[in-house]
Length: 208
Image (cartoon, rainbow, N blue to C red; front, side):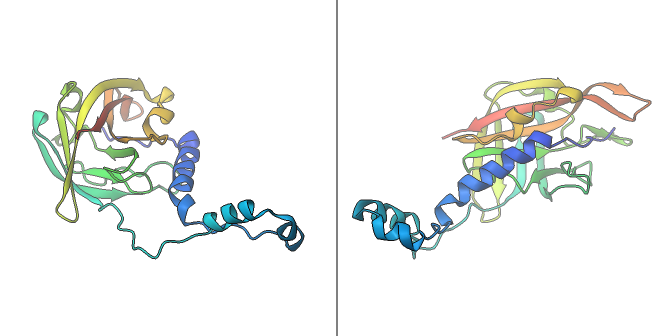
């Protein structure tokens, strides 16, 4: 009945790529060897100096998400912070009534794919994302953040995938614009294994 763990074999590589891009501006350029420095043109030297420049201005990171609201299906719940399990899979929410944000990934509102996971049901009944499959194009998803601000996304499509063919690239790979992925379980239930055979994934984009 639980969400199940999503494999990150390719996803981890994508997240590493995203992190590398985000930190590129903060890295200092490697110093040139002495011999090379003597033969470098003023223009090339200027380029190298620019790569090592660090602004004295402070950078304010995007606030962390703390709550999700999906009016079309009656969802308004706090968000837990999720990481990775010991086996390198994505951690799943520990409470069926709350969704969780994948913290090593993108923060909602930043360029990239922010990922929020939630259970579809529990032994006691429907869970936070029980009605996720009912969402339609244009439905709104609002994510409230720790500083009191919020960011809204509009649903573009809802898809169902067999868990053996989970679309890692579409869910976790970096994007140039802020996007959101909502993930839960769906399809038929495998009573022997104790979990659903598919995933329901909502793809949403930032609404100006």
